[in-house]
Length: 154
Image 1 (cartoon, one colour):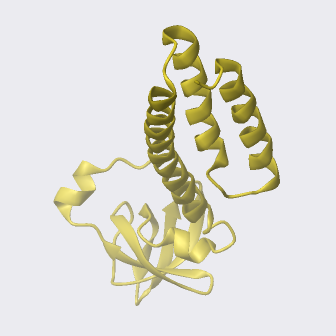
Image 2 (spheres, one colour):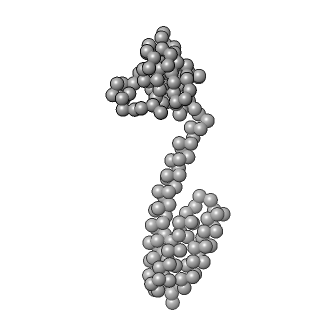
Image 3 (cartoon, helix red, strand yellow):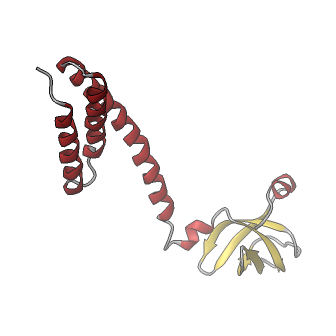
């Protein structure tokens, strides 16, 4: 008394539709397990025990794959979290001194923008890295010669 292959396909469709109404769940991955079980049953004519084993294995593997997909999506969202917090996104940025930093004040080019800078006395053309942001001024430090030669500004 095995379940017909098309019943697995119907179950996959029902689980796929349920995924749209239950956000954030793993029903889509379990639906993939049901779909793969239906394909295996149609191809090999599995017994009931074989179908249940195939469904369990396919669902477990697809849910494991879903874990890695969801973790990657989470990383992209965390990176986008700096969208309206420009100051946090600038820490670690590398640039070039375009107007000498003297007595703790000067200007640096970061990407396509020129920023007021605070830091030690630096000559124009010195590669720098942003260590903090203070309002509209960036706090910079000179890059080490090895770090400066390893990076090329865009």
